[in-house]
Amino acid sequence: MTLEIPEVVINRLPVYARALADLADAGESVVSSQALGDLLDVTPAQIRKDLSYFGRFGKQGRGYNVQGLLARLREILGLDRRWRVVLVGVGRLGQAIAEYGGFSPQGFEIVAVFDSDRESVGKPIGGAKIRHSDDLDAFLRTNGVDIGIVAVPALAAQQVVDRLVKAGIQAILNYAPMTPHVPHGVTVRNIDPVLAMQSMTFYIKQREPAGK
Amino acid sequence: MTLEIPEVVINRLPVYARALADLADAGESVVSSQALGDLLDVTPAQIRKDLSYFGRFGKQGRGYNVQGLLARLREILGLDRRWRVVLVGVGRLGQAIAEYGGFSPQGFEIVAVFDSDRESVGKPIGGAKIRHSDDLDAFLRTNGVDIGIVAVPALAAQQVVDRLVKAGIQAILNYAPMTPHVPHGVTVRNIDPVLAMQSMTFYIKQREPAGK
DNA sequence: GGGTCATTGTGAAATCCGTAACAGATGGCC
DNA sequence: GGCCATCTGTTACGGATTTCACAATGACCC
Image (tube, rainbow over all chains, first blue to last red):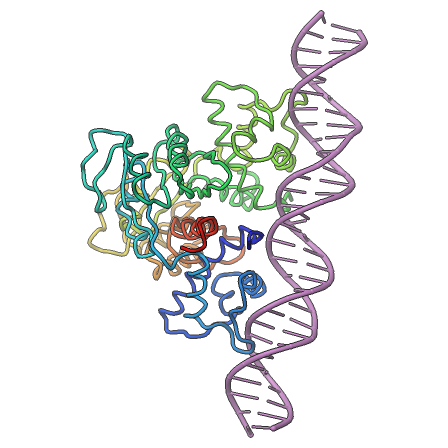
């Protein structure tokens, strides 16, 4: 249906939604594309264009109703319900993710945690008990799970991704420093602070005296 | 000088470099744009075009020398030296970052850690002692620091960013769930797993029966 | 050493995306 | 109630990015 909406647009919507939530918290009831753009370093035209893919949410001469637009964006993005998430990998990074308090308030519930290390199986973490990876497939099939988070070493990551995909997972948040292979129809987002750093150094270098 | 290279291209270079490092580890000495593209889900043409911004690194009929191209990319990105990094914020997230072992092997050294909580000042973390935020400016001015990592609550983040910028920092890795304002000439990368999740849900929703 | 095959580097074409600009609508004011 | 100032939604444009396609080149083989 509406499948020609550019991915860059979709990626900006959560940013808009976040800003709107902040404005709502601050007691603002109306915001213009100009004001929102100032907040986010985005041109007002881009905001209006992005929103126009989905409908007409503003009022000329006035702007957007903060609560109203926020509600519509949440609906569009599917944030008006809770999502069930599994986490695979409970090393340092996995532990931090399991105990991170930022997902649940936004509707992402980590319903199970898996690891391949039999030693850690059974230990409690972030409100769940660690299960063994061997039980991953069975769990996914008997429980509705929407999203998988991969936090295993790079060498094991593709294998984990494959198992998630085979079990029907449609979205994967990958923390492993590698590029996962997934079939068409599965959405992946990669979180890799090292890559982010490595692209910034290019720009620092550009600006510094070429001598050193 | 070479300042019309698209940012998207710069962002892909570290991905190429990572894949090349993996290939080198696997003992491969030569790789074609086709093979590298298969590995990374990128078209061969894109790889060749990206590289062509910087020079001619391949040999027709053969491909690219893995070690050679890796070395050139590292040089282009400035990864052939170590970078000095400060971390601001030692809450849950900041602690995880301070103790994350992934930065140092890639040349990013966290040389100091700051927090506004006087209770935690002096405590050791990830090999450094926590300093008080009041000393941030002085530290930055007397020590060469290239990059700042922001891991404070959203409400405090802009203030931290401003202080980093005022002290001359040129690159910021922001973990706070907000959009930082920086002057032209400062590079920012945001790490926000929640935003990543929130864009994926759109696609899951698209594919699921519209009924529910 | 010449022929063959594979693969690069690169202009040109196609596509995608962002910006500009304006017509049309809304609210406020007198 | 009419006028003015404001701000949206949208179309058209232009720029940026990706893809295409092929000439040029180097390696390998006999």
